[in-house]
Image 1 (cartoon, rainbow, N blue to C red):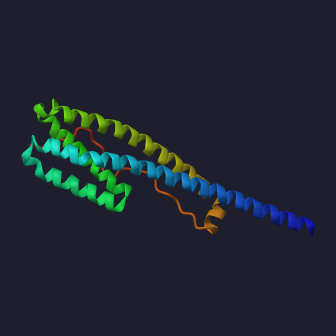
Image 2 (image 1 turned 120 degrees about the vertical axis):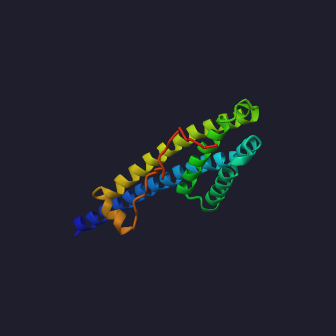
Image 3 (image 1 turned 90 degrees about the vertical axis):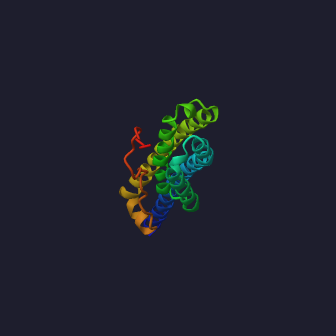
Length: 176
């Protein structure tokens, strides 16, 4: 009888320890997702300044400016990382527009915005790698035996890795 009680206590202890470990991993995924959100928000805070700077030189690109403003608003409402990635493509379009105007490329405000954007982009890439690393570790844990049993009991679900929905292309071409 004592052996059965000890086995039950050890089993309960193991379940509690594994459950807490899974919760720890899940919280790291949430924290790393928050890091991406912070950098996306910082990048999106640059949008109005960048748009105004480029607008002054390219009056006929109004459609691009409207789309990026709408996408930025949608992300800020939903905080969906996939919505945030749509803006990345549109950002590249604005930079491409800027590169078509030599006088804009020499503008100090534009150069400063481009420098800040570059810095945020590298931080965002690092945040994405951290998120994917945390997510992979979490997914492996909840899909590996015997943790998968505990994960199913407590209804832990796989998390999606961060992947951009569009084909990244640094050579965006804009017809002017």
